[in-house]
Length: 315
Image (tube, rainbow, N blue to C red; front, top):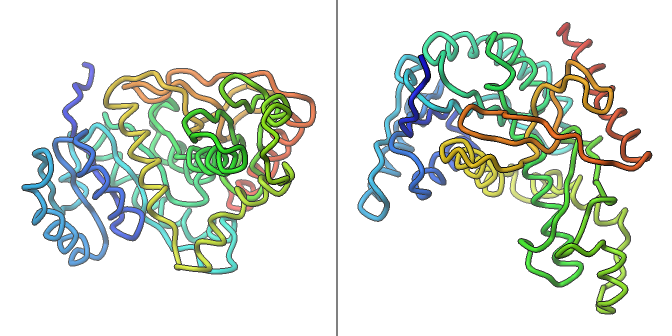
C-alpha cells in the first residue's frame, strides 16, 4: 500500500539546526504538522511553545514536542541530532561520535516511521547517510543526505558576487563529499548559459578573484562561520526546507543531495552528492553529468576518502 502524503514532518534534534529547520518549515506553509524530538525534552517543549505563540502570523500548522512514537505517519523524518562541530574540528572528527548516536536513534525512527523518507542533515552527512541506510534497512531511494545542496548554494552566491549577477541566474554544482574533498564543477558552471570565461570576457567588471580563491571560500565557509558565531544554521535550514519542498510537492527538481551511488563515475556503495532528481518517493534518479578528466578524478578521490572513513568505523 502506497504512503499518502499528509504534510507531516518530524525533526529529530532540537539544536541550532533542528530548531531553525522547524521554524523555517513553520514559516514555509509547506507542512501541516511538525513533531520535534530531542533527548532534552524541555528544550523541544520550549521551542514548540515559542513557535506556537507566533501561530497567528503563519498558515495553519500543528507543532508538538514528542517521542519517536509520535513521529508515526510522517512523510519525512529530518535527522539533525548529534554532537556539535567545535572550532578547529573538521567534519571527519565528528564521525565516530555521531555514528554511535545514529546507531541508537535510527532503529527507533525505523520502528515508527517505516513509510517515511529519512533526510539526514547531521555531519559528516555523507557518512551518516550511509550509516542510516545500513542501520534502517530502508530502500536507498528513501534515505537522503542534505549533501552539497548548501555548498552549491554557497558556490552560486560567491560566483554571483564575483560577476555581479543575481544568484538565481548563476548555475553551478559542488559535488562529492560535503566537506574538505568537495569538488567544484567549473566545466559546467555558467551565467545564463554562458561559460564563466565567456561571461567574464564580455563583462570587464570582475574583481579578479581566482577560481581557486572562490572554491576555498566555499569549502571553508562553515569553518569561518563557526569561528565567528559557534555554529551554522540559517542557510542549512533553508537548504533542508528546499529539499522538503521538492519531496512534498513531487517536483522532480535536480538537487545535489547525498544518496547511494551505484556505478556512476565508477563509484560504488558510498553515499555522495551528485545531481539527483528528487520527487515524492525520495531519490528518483542520480544523473551522470559530463565532467572533465580532472573533475572526475577529484570526485573519485572524494569517494575514496569517504570509503576509508567508513572502514575506520567498521561500516
